[in-house]
Amino acid sequence: MKLRNKVAAIATTALAVSGVTMTATPAQADLVTLCSGHGGAITLPTDLAVPAGKSCFLDGTVVQGDVTVRKGANLHIVGGEIEGRVTVQKDGYFDAQESSVSDRVVNRGSYGTYMEDSSAGAALRTVPVEGGNTDGFAYVVDSSVRSINAEVGAVYVSGSRVNGAFKADGVEYVDVYDSVVRGDLSVTAPNSGGILCDSEVIGAATYTGGSGPVAVGAGEKEGFCSSVNYVDGDLSVTGVSGGVYVDNNIVGGDLVTSGNTPTAQVGDHNRVRGDILTEEVALRTFSATVVEEFEAHEDGLAEEVEQARSETIEDAMAAGSAF
Image 1 (cartoon, rainbow, N blue to C red):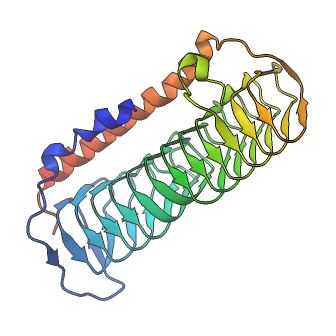
Image 2 (image 1 turned 135 degrees about the horizontal axis):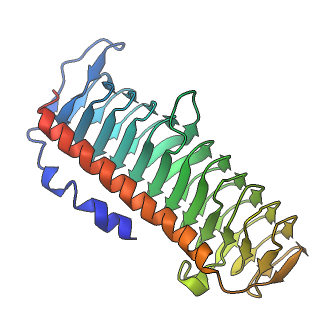
């Protein structure tokens, strides 16, 4: 994936920030360590907060509490551990690389969260708040989370594992590539559709309402998918406007397409164990507009993460040592 190549080099020169491993002096449980600048391999026995409008870059740091990224702040952690939850407030940015979060990660009207080679022991959530960012993102690459519950922004998952339910309602789009969802996948009323590609859903996959295009395993001819999707339960795509494309799926339950405008295009390479209950026309080659729509999702992802990570590291290094 081109995103990894673009952003991986940004932090390379900064990875030598940490020096001797240290442990901070024990403190009261209700104390909060503020981070504005950069920190290395230190263990913090407190909660941590990034002050509003500031940037924090951590390399090998262990936080034995909760983390809050305050309004307009940025946090990038590499090779670290957060033993509590992460809350990202309005216009904040959280970037975890080769790191673990023991509890949930919650975007509250934030600019976005990017997880790469990382894990979250509980849910990844995106929650709309009054005055918050409605164009934010939750991007999960080569990572694992317990579940996803998204109510705002864009959702992009690649090479990852969702160990429970994946629910998105009223978001911008939901793109899932080469991933495993060990629960139901439910996408309701997205503004710009989404794609399910080279993935497994150990449950039902349901797309309801909203604007397309929605492509479920149908991108092989355009280079989006190299294999098939496996859906253990029913696969249902209903009430979508803007285009529906369904092909190259193994479905353990029923395949349902109805009420879509225009009528769903269903290919000949679906293997369905249950009933086929479809209003359909034959699958045709994607139009240039559909191809551009999905390409724009990934291109936008690369640009946003590249810029946010670069600015976070530069600002944090310029601010000096945080601890």
